[in-house]
Image 1 (cartoon, rainbow, N blue to C red):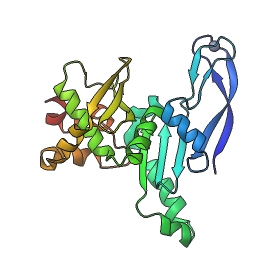
Image 2 (image 1 turned 90 degrees about the vertical axis):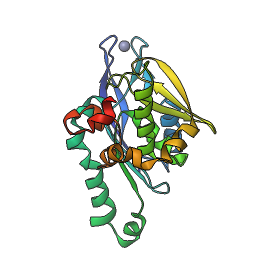
Image 3 (image 1 turned 30 degrees about the vertical axis):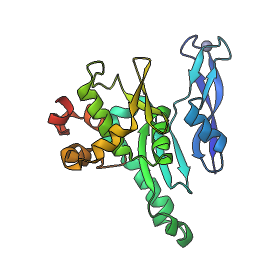
Image 4 (image 1 turned 45 degrees about the vertical axis):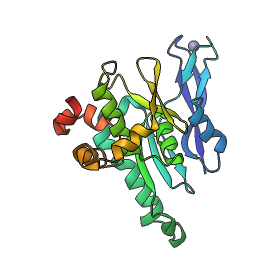
Length: 232
Ligand SMILES: [Zn+2]
């Protein structure tokens, strides 16, 4: 089941508030239209009814898809620096919903679920794309880390993030947030990385400690990050 709530939203351009129906929980299996909207970038975007300025709802919600075994809590992007405290929420919710208090039928389905914490709808889209196309999301983060290390035009900063927005047979397409541009990367680059897992052992271990599988683990917590990988 999907649930929605009416909430006042204030337009950042003109300051006028209007009531919007926003997702609280979303079942991607039963609402393929909203899943498609997340994937095409139109999810919860609307023109301000007063001035027409483009607005976007980034309120937190839980995204579920039982057939695809996806349980993803999407937090507001501005809460990302607090990821270490928040990332346990989806795992606790998943355990309560599908194991601890679940009937045997549901418990049987719980194996193999991908439980994730993401910040912002663009980060949710990235996870959905990864899982749909059989890409390992942790390896995708390591590919981004390599791109940050190799390319002078990318800054390793929370303000400049690579977010996967499309997958073609030979190319992975990233949007560069904060720079308003895109970057196409050969899919082979991801396969090449995966051929040398030993070289990536330390950052991989760091990225997969919890449901927040994202370079933000390194960007927002430098004191506990594998420094040599982040700055090399
Ligand atoms: Zn407005």
